Image 1: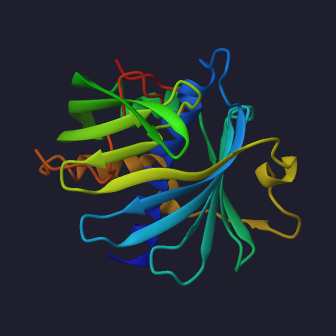
Image 2: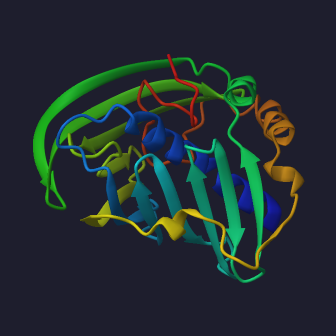
Length: 240
């Protein structure tokens, strides 16, 4: 897989993660943490780890990560208030812009059919947060690809993002070093000196084509180590 495809895949995963977080963020009630920073740690079944830094502020989010080959850094900023996502490449001082247009996203992803069963496994404290532990079995169709999987998810009433998720294969996603508090506004802006570029693999038409080309990949497990529950918005379209 070439570098562009690897980056494109990672950005798609970021869109799904951000869609879960930002789509549910507006539903927060009393006691919800609206602003925080955290380490998002992914561990694959083989024990390899990668860590993203995330920053959340009132429905906007910043994710900092290494590029797939580890040759540089990449930053994805989701601005729900502007309906825009920016992907920044700091070493090369350029960025890519995607408009998060609800109609286009619905056309690309469609209304996501999702069949979910849940089993309540009680409560546990994870990284300082009291969590409800659930076993979730889900069958989902995203971009022409059917995904069947089982995962265990730990969720807190104070956060709109899972504190921990573990797939059947042992892959884990976990939020660590969660630090509530106001986040600097410039984290969610394009820094001075960056130039705008176009990259075809980030376009909506290419994402649709990507989905069509994967229709034959049925009954595969998700690239994500957790399930996206009913109610997911990517970033504004809601699963039913």
